Image (cartoon, rainbow, N blue to C red):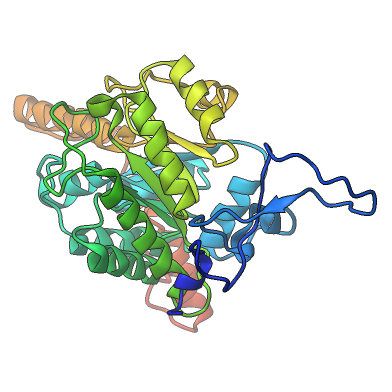
Length: 359
């Protein structure tokens, strides 16, 4: 088999046996057996190397993807604020967040000044990811991958480029190629089959990447608003069987629906996306954790704050003719310190340089 394909078992194949505990099976009448009965489940992905139990113990890895898997396997909710550029990423790191989220909407807005309507390309997303991941290479970055930017070959290319950029995980969705923000109306989704094909292509690409990547693949469905919650949950079950590590229903409208979704998809971890004024209630991190979510992202937290802050500063400048009030006492050096000034100064000094003895 080709690399990556050997983790999928067909009903005809006897290669690479895949076993899964079957909770509904009757136990064997065998007093010498101490293991639960296992039964092959044709078509279900399983890679023993990526089993969550392998990430329960030990120091947190310096590899971002491995660290994200460790965070998913261990207690506590993973909190990932949405960042839109280097400034917002620096602010999130300064605040102490140990995981970041590169939102597609935020990337489109910050790089292109455009709405989230399938306008940004893979290159836009990758270039942004390279910059963000380079600021703190061991901090996991979860990146939006939209629809995978095309067919299976493009999905695979997306995975490869994200891994090379240092991204820890990505989510890929079931909207049509002319997609839109998941919290806008009028969404359209592809068939179940096409969605599963996207997930499977991403998984195969990850598993065939040289060096055994731990890259996390998140299956996202936008079908809840189009076809209903039952269909959305079913699609995510298919995605999980195809190898998705995490499940993500966009636009969960109530706490009860989130809880039922988590229950239906166990043991797969569930991601919830909170956008103020969006389809999903403004759950706090503690509320989301209590409801069973494993990851919570705040997609537009930095973008919306930037709009408010920059708009106010521009209006103040226009009105008063000075930026004194909007600066709030932050001089250039104080600004650059947030951007990592001291790290650069220290590096230069350790290397024997003297370029920045005085800054």
